[in-house]
Length: 117
Image (cartoon, rainbow, N blue to C red; front, side):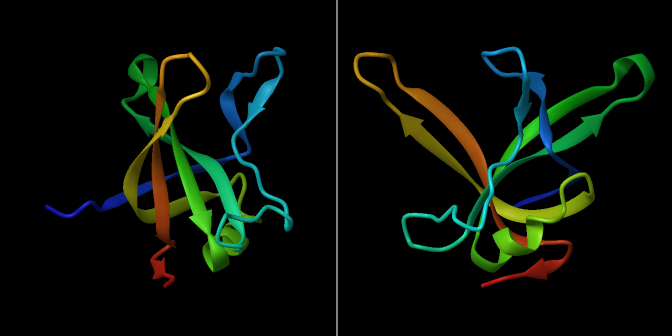
């Protein structure tokens, strides 16, 4: 079975929850100066994916990471509906003596029907 994800949702500017200071948390982090360890553009963002209707409406904020040309193309899409193709990764972060924290991310391979190599 391939590790492939296809989802459609709203590219969120804010994540739908508040940060430690009580301010709306930013759902993405991109500036032209943000670069990956490989030296290419990198964009972290969330997609709000809904399920259910009315009182049963639920929203999941899915963490995504895009690199290179995809990151640059997505930088102006905040607030828009996007279709994302990608794959799932799980990252383990351990700081000092604290227990490890695991993050699930969708690495974006294509957006709105366009794959970028």
